[in-house]
Amino acid sequence: MNTITKQDETKLAEEIVSVLPVGIARACSDDRESIRFAVRGDGIKLRSIVLSRASLRRLADDPHRAIKIEYLRRDLLDTASQRRQFRYPRLVRPVSKAQALPFGLPFASAQ
Image (cartoon, rainbow, N blue to C red; front, side, top):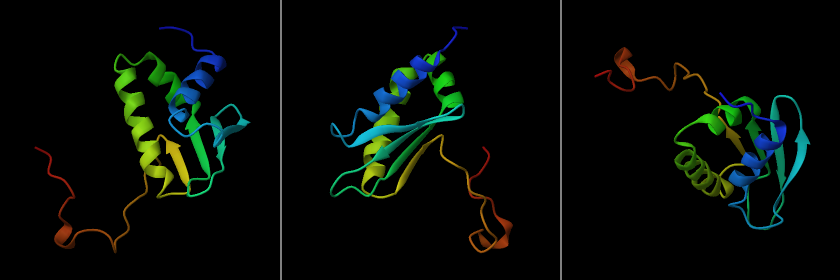
C-alpha cells in the first residue's frame, strides 16, 4: 500500500473540482478530516464542497480510480444547479417511518 500524503489528497480533490468553471471554487479549509471548497458564481446554487480525506486516500489506491473520479466530476456538475452542498462520500440519511413503504416491504429486494 502506498503512503498518501496531504499533497496527494489535495491534488485528487482539485482534480475532482476542476470540472467547475475556473475561479468558481477555491479551497477555504484544510483540516485533518476533510478538504473544503467555497463556491461562488452567478447562476450556480452550489456554495460548498466537502471531500473526506479518508475517502480520498481510499480513492487514490483504488484500481478503478479514473472511472470513479469521472463519476464524481459528473455528479458534482449535476449537483451545482440543484443543491447547496456537495459531499464525498454522501451522508446517508435514515428513512423516517413516514417515508417507509407500507406493509413493511423493503425498498429493494435482496436477490
